[in-house]
Amino acid sequence: MASSPSFEDLIDGMTLEVWHNMRTAVETGRWPDGRRVSDEQRALCMQAVIAWEVRNLPEEERSGYVPSHCKSADGDTGEQPVDLRPARRHGEH
Image (tube, rainbow, N blue to C red; front, side):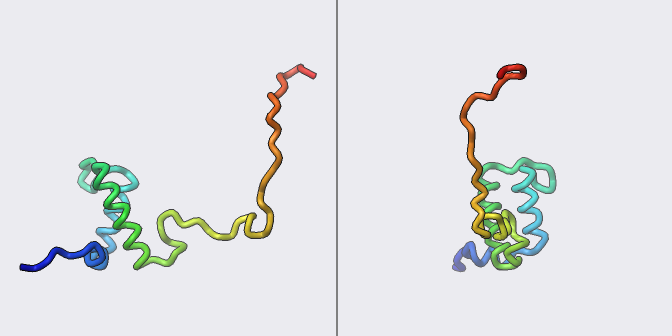
């Protein structure tokens, strides 16, 4: 009796079309035929989409990619002082 394919085997066998359909299902909550995606299906699809992207796409093209070049990398923390006093109403001095 043959064993069931592993998660990795399934990801390795995913086509671009399957990846696209799963990604769309995660984004819209619907399968291509219009049926609603269950919460469990959505979670599993998200795992599969991320795993497929790690194997097949450069980092900057993956879902959720955030560029590493930000102000804090330049030493600027971007922090600004916050004034917690209530704002004055128009006409108050």
